[in-house]
Amino acid sequence: MLVIVLENAPPRLRGRLAVWLLEVRAGVYVGNYSRKVREHIWSQVEAGIEDGNAVMMWRTNNEAGFEFQTLGANRRMPADWDGVRLVSFHPEVEGPDL
Image (cartoon, rainbow, N blue to C red; front, side, top):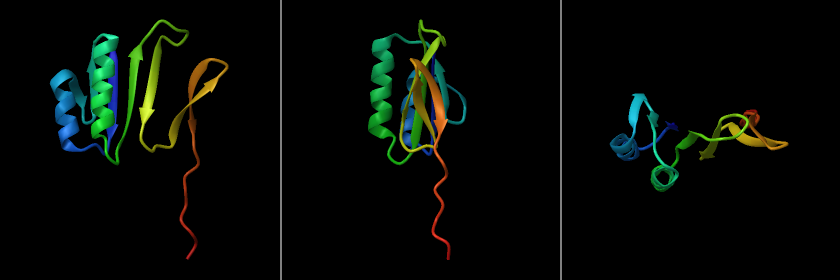
């Protein structure tokens, strides 16, 4: 199982992903591919994401049963806690007081 979620992605990237994956909601793509195809799809995301952000999750044989990686600016970032991948939240950046 493979899931990719895009935010603020250009339409051409969304269209490219729709060639390989089923878009079940706006910006949410699912499919079932080998590691080699998954890496090729992710390289397409890296090349076309521009100012957006993305996360890709896939099924694997570990404690959680899945693995994930992210791309682009987002408050939610991967964190490793003793070999377990979790998500940490970075504080919101506020502008200067006027």
